[in-house]
Length: 285
Image 1 (cartoon, rainbow, N blue to C red):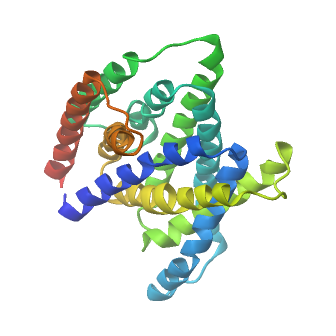
Image 2 (cartoon, rainbow, N blue to C red):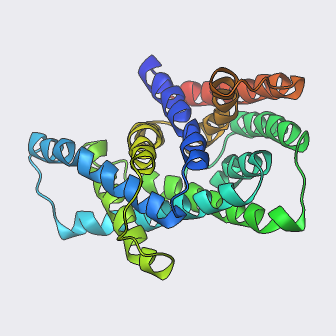
């Protein structure tokens, strides 16, 4: 594993961890937020997509569009359900459930799982469970939100697994930009079933949607998809557990929230599990 790929994984995890801050601050309907962040991301990356096509001497074909439909739909559903679930349940509940991706990835990806990755998954998930149970509770008021977050996690894991099968694409932008466009159009199509999308939005809400498009979507998800193309899927899935650590650090500096001692113990377990899995990938290479 090169240092560049390791940096891409850490950077992608950090950017994705900022999504919950934007989501909690926004009051716009979840489906509109999902559609806006995806369509804006696709629009901003359109010049990069065209440049990549020309650089590799390719033209856009219907076959290529077909490869982006399912990943786009899965990503769109994940964004919509995650925003809904995160607003309906507590932060500890939502974070615990959405970070269960390493448990689902071995059943969805086709590259199997090694003994080291199993060990890394167990260690990392121990930290997740320990941190979550410190403030985790199930009640009728949050049960529906918990279930929506769990379903959202399955869609996200499926999106990562299916996207990995497009490793033969010459450039990541040739694949990811149409995926964002398909996902955004899918969310836009279902928006009228929930709310009228044609209405005035406050500048603050538009800026939050723009922040979601640039940081966790363009920078975060694109980095994770790059890692799924070049690293083993389970190593990437375990690496995403690090969102807990970054979220805790940001909350400390931005919201003056001092994490309790379970956060530090869980962070050590998460880092240990990620290192075990990543070293397994490096050994395989």
